[in-house]
Image (cartoon, rainbow, N blue to C red; front, top):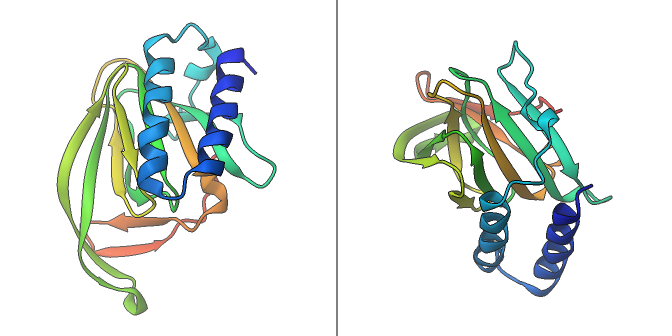
Length: 184
């Protein structure tokens, strides 16, 4: 692991141990991620590799033994994305290369017993190099790479999303369901 990522992890451990609220964690983590995003000399060529079929690649840089404090790189091929979903944990995402479009969603109506959820778009955030999106565990977003080059972004999660309760949302059919697909 690169020294800059090791330093980030040490700082994350301190912040999460000393900070009580998600809002305070996000506020303290944000500048650490911005600094790494603005000086990406630690980024390795393999972080840009993507699965051609799914259109993205995920490269785990660090994960605590208890699955907390996961740090990863995500790469998106041009024209690919992922439908609306939540993470089930707080997240801070910083753009490294290219521009990743994040469409934010909010729940208008929900009936868990029927798997019904009407969501509506509540905004868009384009994350380019050095830009950051910080979200709490309830945030819903979809991601797309509308550009012509692969995008690259650094993700920090309060817990590895393979170990949280996440949901995917279908805004056309007004449905939602637990996501069971593991990010590899």
